[in-house]
Every structure is written in structure tokens, then in C-alpha cells.
Length: 310
Image (tube, rainbow, N blue to C red; front, side):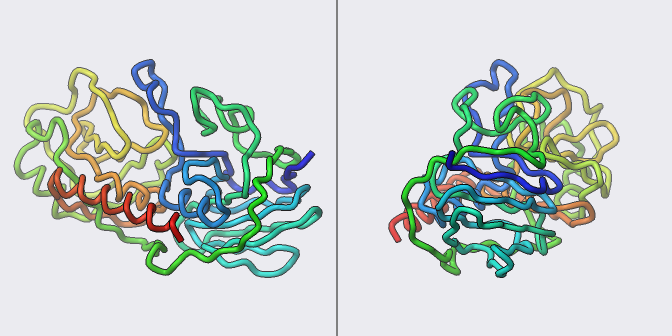
């Protein structure tokens, strides 16, 4: 069998693609990569379609033995990595052969790195996606994180080129980010002073952060008359504010509805930046327009079209 074997599992390694769409009305989260931009660039490195499933590596990576000949690429958070003892660079692809050993260590910036393998990770799709939804125990490899001893089949694509991501496509991660937002569905439920606090204060990523969402700490955001609402839909990047006034950024594994007021939504192109933040990192919010948010998506889409023409 062509495939890979995990000698060590790492801190948290899961299989993710761009998520499962069309099922939120049934209560099923989209899931998918926390940093979708890096998943796409990893796939480009190995000649895969940009929506292909990859291994999302959080904090500390696994050790993998290859039982196939293929090409691999790491993108996203730079991390310690070696192939048969030879140091690997991020945003670069490498050929691997049967018996080769990939060792990955601690991320050096950001928090999530993406390992793409030329070809297809041969696991079943669940609702049109191979993404792992950990809380629901579905998708991915048996609905769970990767564990030592796991063997996963790979269907090689035959792609054998090695690539390096052009400089203009690379992301550089910081411990402080300014995230662009558009007003949320319940922005009118907040005092003007609360909105001002939200847009002018610095917030810190609290220890309560995972693939479902990030709780922040900082200046309290005041409501006019309470935080509770009739439950309404939630999207990736929605920012809820419960009664204590501390915002929560909803992310890939977010629930589909919620009963707290939503003050804002992070624009789509900035959501991957959140997925690279860790406990203690800083966030500022800057309001922008819906039109600019659309323009930013179109600009990024054109960027990837140009990348795939290279």
C-alpha cells in the first residue's frame, strides 16, 4: 500500500480541507482549515487542487515514515522540520521516497502548519469533505486526531516537480494583528461607548481558545440592555459578546447558531490570521466596509488564479 505511517503524533494533527458546506441548517459545522490560505499554498507546492485535504499541524508536529514516492510541502507557521536529518524550509516542496523519515518539531512563528502530499489522502468524504470535526467525531481519520501508529493510504498523483512559494504570496506571522471587521447583525444592541471600546482597545487571546473559537480579554464592551437574543446564525469570523463584555471570535468548528449578540464579523481574508494566533497574542479591530471586504476577496481570488498559472 502506498501511504504513510505516523511514528509520533505531535500535539494536535488532523486532516482538514476547506470544509463541508450546505449542512449548517442541520446543525453541522463547516470545520476545515483554521488557516485556509496556508492550506491552499501548501497544495500549490505539491501540484494539488487548492481545496485538497492536508494535515493541519498545531504547535508541535509529528514524525512520519513514507511508504510511497511522492512530493511534500509545508506551508503556514514555520516550524522545525527535517527529512532524513536534512533541514527543510517552509513554503518549499521536496521529493520523498519509500523509507524516508520526516521529523517536525515546534512552530517558530504562528501556531499551525500545513503538510500537503502530492496526490490524495485516501479517506472517505463525509458530507462532501474530508475535514475532521473533533467534537462530532466525524470526518478525517476515524473522526479523531492523528495518533502514533496510524497508517494512512496515499494515492500519488505522479507530480514530481519541486517548488518554492514566490515571496509575494508568503505570509509572515506576528504576535499582534489588526483585523478588519464589518458591523455585525446586532451592533445596534451595544452602547456607543461599547462600540468605541471594541474599535480602540487592545484585546488578548485568552487560554480558552481552540478550533471552535477564541475568547479574548480586554476592555469590556457594554450592551444597551443585555447580551441575550433569540438564537441566530453564526459564521466563521463572527464576534459574539456575552454579558461579561469580553468578545469571542467564532472559528472553523463554531456552532451553527448562538444566543449572544454579534458585534462584528471579521472579513474573510483576515480569518486565516486568527488561526495563527496563540494564547497571549494581541488583537486590534478596524472597521471597514462590506464593499472593501468583497474587493479583498476578489483580489485574493485573483492572486491564487495567478499562482496556479505559474
